[in-house]
Length: 356
Image 1 (cartoon, rainbow, N blue to C red):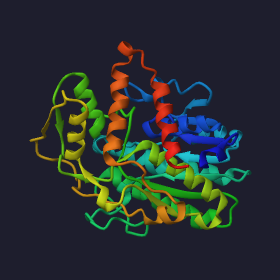
Image 2 (image 1 turned 45 degrees about the vertical axis):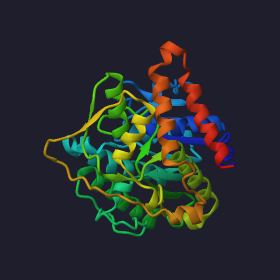
Image 3 (image 1 turned 120 degrees about the vertical axis):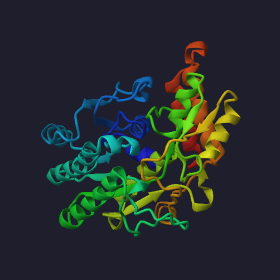
Image 4 (image 1 turned 30 degrees about the horizontal axis):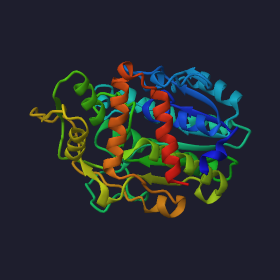
């Protein structure tokens, strides 16, 4: 199995306290990797990172990705075999109120990692996570391929597109003949237990449910490439191993998401939540939109299927059910003595059985 290849490997994860970063960290802990995490302190309350007690057993560092001096000292002394760069300002809505911070974190933070990789003496394989939002979105129904034009009309999307341009430039300038290898991962919308970021559909619904309130939905008819976080994290891990083993993948980008036929509207998620949690209620946002937000986003993931042998294994219903099961367990843990860490590990191990 792919994850077994990380046993005893030194793995650096930036953004390890975030939603995807925490799932990736736990995945690698199960695999037996030696992990160093670099991130800001958990920014959400509750915190997934704290809920599953993830700081134990790893080298946990609270360092801003923009502090290049501290970043460089930690990474060079660690001598990583693999780097997964996830540290980012990840919220589209927040990018409007913190636009400079979004650009600085998502672009300069990425450049800082690339600059440090240049200085590593030991060969290193790095997967840089950007976003499906990096494409110039013209609501292409056939799905965006990795060769399609990148762009972005909102600050978040544009910052991710700019990071892709910087990565391409560094590859062509410094890494073509280097002993280091880099690639970018562009994933669709990710759901799963432990996400408490305001402005995302699942967390907003869970906050409202816990408070026994109706949730206001910004754009119920928008369609997105939804997928469970364990599927995406496995894709990142598989890309890293194959990138290390195959120099032809160096400098390439890969999409991760469902096929165009398997994308769903926000309304579909709401209906599935209602099916699993009867008390759930929602209403549309009648306020005038102030953000540039497209109604359709589809990825073409044929390249990942062909080269990485990666594709989604879970149905949409299964994806949402696993997510709701996790949140139910979290909110009922005090009454039922639920072990959230054990449940999270079980969801990872159950998925691993699907991809054997």
